[in-house]
Structure formats: C-alpha cells, structure tokens
Picture 1: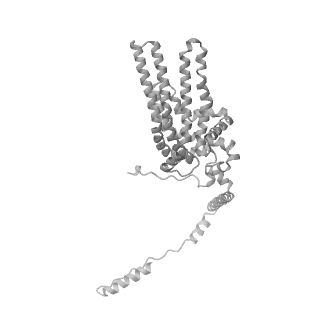
Picture 2: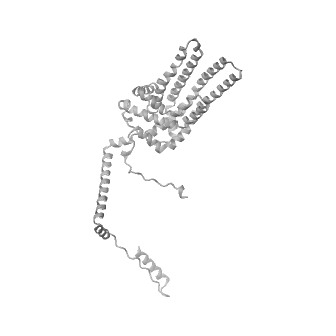
Length: 372
C-alpha cells in the first residue's frame, strides 16, 4: 500500500517574499498552479448559467434540421424554407436576450471570485459569489442586456439583407456591417467593461468608458488577446450540431480560466494607463513580489539571509578543503570534541532470600533516579 502514500516534495529553494509574482503573467501561472481545482469547480458552476444559451442554440439546430428535411421531402419550397430559416434565426436571437441576463447574474458572482484570485486574496466561494451578485448585479444585467440587443440587431440586419439581396448585391455587403462593428468595437469594449465593473464602483457609463480607454490604448493587441482567451468559444462558431455541443460544454467549464487570463491582461493595461492617475492604491495590486521589493525592511532582511546563507556555504567549503588536505588533523579534532560516553546504569542486585519487599522497591527507585 506504499504506492498510495504521496511523498512530500521538498522545495528547490527557500521561500522568500521576493519570489512571489512580480508580473500579471506570473500571477496567472501562480493561480493556475495552486487553485486549478477550485477554478474547475467554479467552471461547473458557470456551466449552469451558460447552459440555457447552449440549449437554445442546439434546439435551433434541431428545428433547422426539420426544415431541411421537409425541403428534401418536397413539403416546402426553397423560398418557404429560406424564409423559415430566417424567421427562426431572428426568433431565437430574440429569445437569447433574457438568457444572456441569466448569464449576467452568474457573471456578477464569478467575476468577484476571479478578481480575488487575481489579487491573491483569500476566497470564500459562497460568500464572495453572493457578495458579487449583491454589489454588481444591476450593472452586469445592463451590460449583458446591451450585448444581447447588439447580437440580435446584427443577426436581424444580416438576415434582412439576404431577403433583399436579389434587388442588388450591395445589400448583402451592407448586412454584414453591424456584425463587423460589433466584433471590432462593441465586443472588445464589452470584455474590458466586464473586468472594470468588478473592480470600480463607478456608474455604468464610466465603466464602459474605462473599457474604451483600455481598447484604444492596446488596439492592435486587444483582439488577438481576446481571441486567445476565448479559444473554446471559437469552436462554437462552426455551424455544426456536435461542434457547438462540444464547444459549448468546454466554454462553460473553462470559462473561469478564460476570465482569469483576460482579467490579468486587463489589469496590466489598467496599471499602465488608468490606475496611476486615478486609483494609485490599485497599481500592482496582487503583485506581491513587487510590493516586497518596495519594502526596505523586507529587502534588507532578504539580503541578510542571502549573506548568511552564502557565509554558511563558504564555511562548509573551507571545512571540506581542510578535510581533504589534513584528514588526520580533522579526525583528531572531531574526536576531541566528541562528548564522553556515559557508563551504563548500575542495576540493583537482589540478594537471595534476603531483604523485604519494601527494601527492594526503595532500591529500584534509587536505581531509576540514578540512571535518570
């Protein structure tokens, strides 16, 4: 049964406050290393809030498949089938708006937990989740309401353009404009605002302004980083039932990991462009290694520890050299400092047929005291 016992690992180097994370990348790696299981459990919780949207989209795939089957059987004409597909797309985009609100409720609690992990604070799932909903539920509801409306408008305009594309090819291109604007402008601002709401106690318009500042300051890096932090969501863009099912499940469970990466990236921008002039107390929040370097007492203590460690290693090296050059001298000096060997305790000798039980007990006690 020895294989069931996990052997403890010894750290390769001594702990020091200066070895704590100094960059947002190190914070991300540190949280993944120590809290990956908690993030996975949080992912199961987030999946509950994402699942209504997944079910809605999967049901849309099923209904579209029924329309295609009716078209193949001749029950519907091509024109009727195309119109049915467009109406179904608009209907489900409209249904998704309240489902986004359900996700917004869960996101209010999840983002508080992600924030505390990113700041390397203690986390209590039940208390922090409930407190996050209590503090930020209205702003997250408004944020996801706007997201749902933008998604509905983009789908509706694109579907409308396909119905009138016969009048001119230009309409098919015009119908893509709302989706492109949403992808290149609205969604990145929404993603940055998602983090800002969890950090600042500002009005909603100011939160979106923070998102706009972050996006404009890192315009060319924002979209690649957003795509990198949303890799599981890319699978859902494939218009296939099974691809969307797998991508939806992965996105729901891995949502905390994606949010953690995006939060660390956003905090990096906020520390550079926004926090120093407005919220200096939030600059480098969670970068405990930088805070330790800024503390002169901790820095001096670490320097003294390193000097003492270096001095001890130097002493050991000198002793090894002396042993190698003068083995007899070192051996005699080691024997000289050895403690003397104490003689064994003297045991009481019991006389044959003599002495009472009382004297024997006294002798044993004296012997025991003498040996101690």
